[in-house]
Image (cartoon, rainbow, N blue to C red; front, side, top):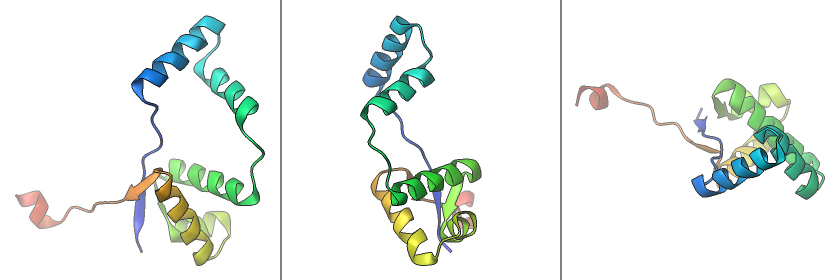
Length: 107
């Protein structure tokens, strides 16, 4: 079974600084500012997007993601879990895990 590591998303430093400055200007936390932005600009999620968001939550909590983990946690089949993992890879949320071998650690 192939596992993937959750890497999340990072804002470019310049954009982060802009958002941070706006939050300070408005006197709110970054979390509240992000919530406002999401409410203003995000369209309602499809059922597939809801599953993808739930898969991201599972990945964050477990620190990794795999077909089996998604099947157990989301009660979906292998093909559906594969589509979700492929979508997360395309969006840059997950990367394949690199397992160290004995030879690599001895070098």
